[in-house]
Image (cartoon, rainbow, N blue to C red):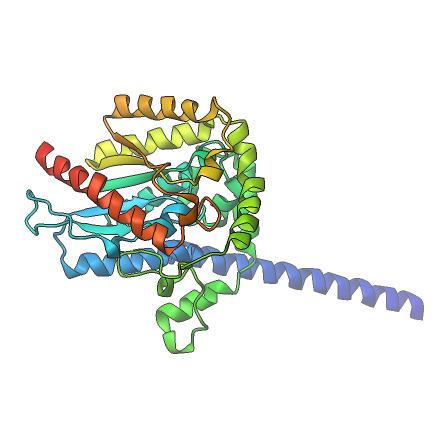
Length: 350
């Protein structure tokens, strides 16, 4: 009898534990989903920080036409609008464009599309849009990184590109366990004095126009070689077997169609790569991307700028991401040789 009673108590304890665990998970998921609905940008602090900063700039001069850069860590680090001289726009009432870097670490074609759709939904409508083309991300979709930043409002878009089981499994798994950074984001927004220190992707790391502030000023050759080797292991396989993926092609075309409907002028920008990085392409690889981009340019009447050879290896810390001097050189060259005419031609066409 005593043994039977002990077994019954053990089963009851296990049952109570399981029910407690289930209740905890349901509570966590419910809270997380509620946050996702009412504060979707908390799940993507990089996007949220940029959006808050950008809206502050827009509020300063509400009628200024807006030029946005969207792209990956390459453009996040290399484009510093704070260094640009004013871009005159003769057809605009306020005389010059507001230029802002809205790049997102890890962004490829589908994340760029997701970012633009979010921005439009959040009331931000650019006049000009510079869209980064990073070849490796056109050959590799990077779904895991994309899903890491997805919110509920992104699901309808992503559901057209990703298998439903993977999308929902990843979404529900991630949202069932609330990461510590989300309470931190809530505190920073509603009780900043109580909030913990911000991470490098928070607003403290970006300038008033979205340029990244924490750039390295110099890198010794041993460090550059070590970091370049890491990038080689990550990127070279996609370059050796380069093909534009169906997802990359569809997402890019959808972005261009969206811009056409919204009357947003688009420029596709192939970002700088060091000579070492460029040596990893087999002879037939990059011409495939060129043919694809030229086809898009002809079909959608957009401009393509190939800036791959604008910088030397000394401008990068890994033949792929720039140091501060590389960012300054790239930004000024882009402004002088590309953006000035891009902005002027837009107003001339109107």
